Image 1 (cartoon, one colour):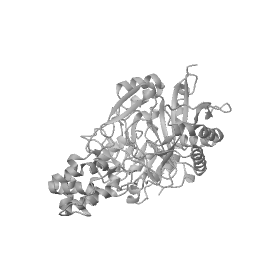
Image 2: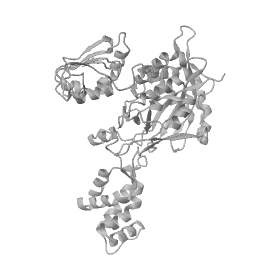
Image 3: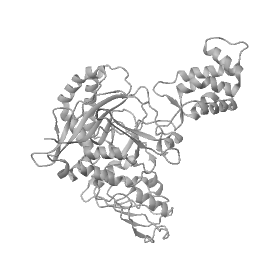
Image 4: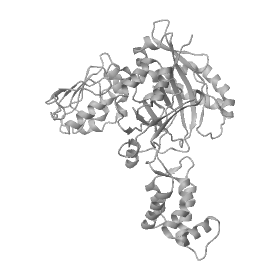
Length: 523
């Protein structure tokens, strides 16, 4: 449906002759690279014409970040709902043709052409165009360089034990500076890493010198990879827009390089990455198969104590725009992007909270708690005789007379104990299916109902998100909406459709973590 990048750009993109359903069904990730070229073209693509007769506005139009005019001929869906969605998702959009709106709800917006007044942050807020996480993919040459570098770092690090959160190595970094040749921005290697971790595990401390040697040898390749990612997600463009305020004697914009291996998929905690200086974070994944990226929520109000903290440590031009964007309330969605092989995600750390993906529904049972609670659940469901026989079996004693229910539940618990240690939880429906394979539907349902009252359950976004900077003695808590009505998880929809990608115990979550930091120059 979309033309190749070689045929672009132009200020208009006419899709009016495309198939309606194909237009709606087109996945956003397929549009990203095309939309990126359109947004960067000279002139950029600012006018989009959709097919006639659409029932809804395609979600992928949000990928066209500089879109100003949209034509939707003979729109047959809910125009008011479409307009509300467009105002929320496309704050740059000023002209809309083809929707007939309700004058009572949208005064001055009646007819086939209307002027949209976006209630989001003004277009002059340059952070607006880059704060929402960008999911992309490196070019072939950059992917090859990243693959080679990460392999060499892993080899240099040597064998490490299964640490609580995986193993990471802050190897070094760069400074964003003006080129002495043409004044354009570039990355210059710095002598010491912008961030130095404290309390290193002995195995990481032992491997760190060798991994630093790898960076010292291959920093040019790393620089190429990181600069390409920063360019694709428009961080370079953002820094250019604020070069007068950020690239000067008062501030250093530093880029910290941190290869991260075997991220434990059970570390499900909503948090910010910030170490007090972080503006942006990028994760460049090393997966050979598509995987689930981090889950994230945008625009949650920042506690006043944390705002005070970052006002003291981050450039005013950045903090002012953070506060401006936060005037728009959160949309109450936990996003769950899919990361293609050797893809990357980039985000503004202070305008989101994120977590390692929880590939379960909220309220999934903690498997260990189910096992520990099984005796009480058997007693509630089947009485004292069954629970006595169950515990006899658990203690290696064959009860007499033989209790069939107790025997089957004992076998089920044995199955639960053999589940992979890389996944600590099991959804209610999956637990029911497991029980129903040996028990009647009625008995399985009764047992699950009993466990719902006594076993522990997990909610990845349980009402709070953590900001904790130990070496600066700063901590704060971001309030997160709770419950299905207040907070919608995209992961839940994926699970319902069977589209969620479970974590494979064979494949570690390896990535190059890049922090783009601002540090006041005290010279």
